[in-house]
Picture (cartoon, helix red, strand yellow):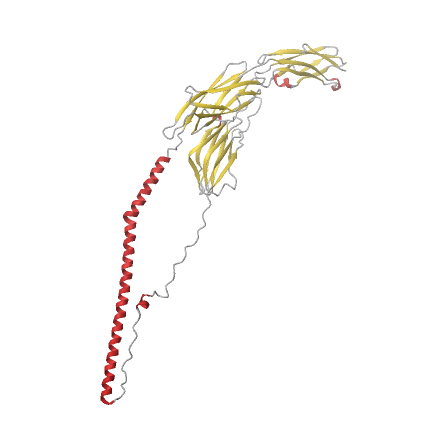
Length: 454
């Protein structure tokens, strides 16, 4: 028993999107009828097929199988020479199975697309964008990037003006846009610009974007300052027109009452002293009269009293208690800066909910800046929610489509405030679709929050 095999062509050159064929001839060198299974091995197996996949060959005769190669216009068929093998397995004599080898040269295929993410970004001093360059070809592509605006009002800073993008991948290149002149207040100003991506040997790709320049002074600042000034003026007027006259009249009345009380005490003391003096004179006169009538010693009828001193009348009551000292108050510590990241992992067609850990929950939270991240370009919907501490339905604070961004940050003009016990949540509904032959992948978007806690 045994077999022999040969290929009609040891090498083929095929352009992506086209097809090429190669015949394999199998001879049965055994003594019985044998069945031979035909299979393709190597990187080309994904885009090649054998017809038929099995040959029934009589002893001494041959059978032919045709191999068709169809390299796709994608990174799955890399440009260059790719070896392959045709495996022939004998049913009757497995030990005599063999592999015939050949090679396929796939011609280059270049296809590049570019997109600015997000298309519009706002900021007072700068705005950040990402240039997403996708290489749909089958070989590495060198690209050159530059940005410009028609009014020359912006400055541009590209992280990588020249970059290499591998086949079948997306490269994000950070772009920072700064206005040449700022303004203190007024309406937002929108400045459009163009980013040009020049792939080597291909036509240039242009993508449009806009920076929304915000005033350096927030719109709420001037009304707030005016309101504070009005409150200060009202407080000063209230002091001079109402409080100060009232305090002055109260103090004057209290002083007058103290003076009247002291005068009354002094008058009472003088009256008592006069009464004592009169009693002494009367006693002396009575004594003299008794001596003249017989020398008998008179018995005093009364003992003169002692007049109270004026200072004793003015002495405060010994039972009066001093005012209690004010209790000391420990100042409340100020809120501390905090930053945390909520990562989601939602399977296709389902949702995932992410919450912060215990170090964030249970404290008041003030969110001022948000960074959205979608590095894999997933599709679906992302929501930022607030779950009240007392229960009830969650409140949706923001809704974003995953297809609209890869990586961008957002500064809140009005901060999001969460009371102690409220829960900040991030929900992602994944809508990724399968790309043959691969199944749909999970969504892995994330959000980073920063602000104050406590």
